[in-house]
Length: 400
Image (cartoon, rainbow, N blue to C red; front, side, top):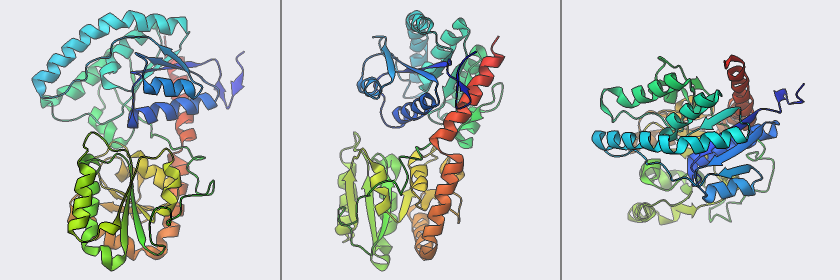
């Protein structure tokens, strides 16, 4: 009989099929769930198409990494015809690399194959089907609507149905973009490390270290510094009321290819006469040390966000969150209890929400505490891993 650990069978071995050069959200998703299920006693293999910074990072973290030295697949982009051409090339690519991946999985006695990248999902499903093992696709994003006639959704639905792929959506919003026929996705919310993001665990950065006045109201935004994250919307909303409420905005994140965006943000603040109210900290390996200096975490992504991990990280750190209630944040933040919803990404709507949030100042500690309780109950990394392993065991029982 197999030895048990935390209620789960140790002999289960799960492989994550990755590119090897992942960054940002996909890297965080692999690192988080793979690491969490390993802590519960499950065998984890990182199967990388090629050596890259993320594959190296996984190896340095103590994970078993097998690099296949295969070329990377094309990423479908552009208009309808360009994407259609890219998908045809992907089919040829899949046929070429599938035998190598299949052999690697068989040699390592893998029972489950897990994949995130959409352009690797059909490949993973086909390989898993030939090996007779379950395949899980963890959707990293919602399925876009730019391809006409819902062909994108139909493509993924057909692949999931053909190969018996178990689809995991990171929010109800993401699940809705996939649809529920013929394959119904399961919502599995991403988790945040409740031990790492614990406000009582360490000495945080002080406001003085961040150049903030001690009695100001500090808004915080964590994530990539780019237009798609809406830092300019939050700043535009803050400008007319910054002096009235002593508002400061701290932006923590990595500069992306858009090198001019941070310059644009500084120009907005300088033109408004409040350059001292904008603090662009840049990248940090320890965002949990920055969050305690913030009064209100802000998420102003203009469009629907698939999940919004930084929102839940702030909640886990007992901070109330003001979020554009489109996509995942509408599910994680409870309006009036753990933060405030903004129904529109326009600056005037954000400004009205900021006024509402500032008026709630006496309630900030209670709202933050409610946010941490909610994050612990629904969005912890351990909870995600336990729910995932339950699905894995069910899939193995049903596997013919």
